[in-house]
Amino acid sequence: MSPEPLRGAPRSRVRPTLLLVHGAWHGSWCWERLVAPLAQRGLVARTIDLPSVHGPATSQQQLAAPAPPTAGLVEDAAAVRAVAAAIDGPVILCGHSYAGMVISLAASGSTRIARLVYLCAFVPDAGESLNAMGGGRPAPWIVLREDGTCIPDAARAADLFYSDCDAPTQAWAMSRLRPQAARAFSEPVPSPAWQQIPSSYIACAQDHCLPLDRQRRMARKVDDTVLLEASHSPFLSQPVPLAAHLASIADRF
Image (cartoon, rainbow, N blue to C red; front, side, top):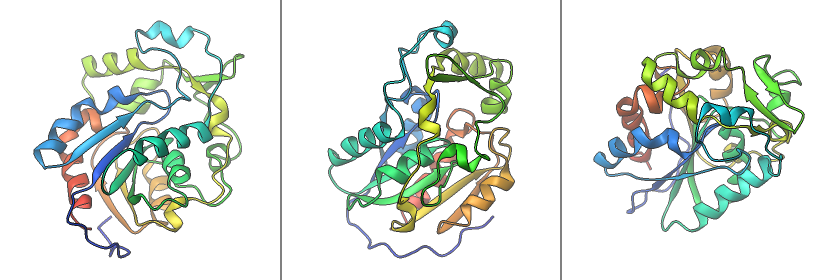
């Protein structure tokens, strides 16, 4: 998958700030290895903890703790908009996995966002929810709980999310996962921002969570695509190549 011509966005004298938006069950911690390689390329990165992911990330036992589903996709998008609004200059939203839904909603109608980057992420059509994109129901490895949250199957999560990470990284990341409000997956995006804002897709060839063929179908909706030989979490396994791709995208407007 090679880059395609970009929809035109005016060049800016100010380098954009990257706002990195994590996927389901994760938090801002997942971007820690990426921030320094981005800084070495002159890019400032900001992160956010989405409100639909619950509780402090302290141990694997957190996955068993009840958490009221107080926030969903709409609240996640509002949180991203608030952070973006506080950033001076142009902003690029980079959403991972579920956060493709979040940035699609957060940037809808916005004049603050210069570009969207979908990192092995969902790219919804108008009115689609994440569950609708998966055939109307959650993936079979998602465990729904009575309190309205969901968690990934612990026996499969390491392979699904971190298949090209070493064992200590897998264990560390698994220990940080937290319950996610299940309703975030059923809420639609009425008018996805990629239809109005220049957008890029970074596809991950070794992704066991969101297969490459699905990524390719969604990537056809946006302006340009690059392929990274990585699993579903390249910010942990390949932060330097990922930073290079993000810097290349940021340098093109």
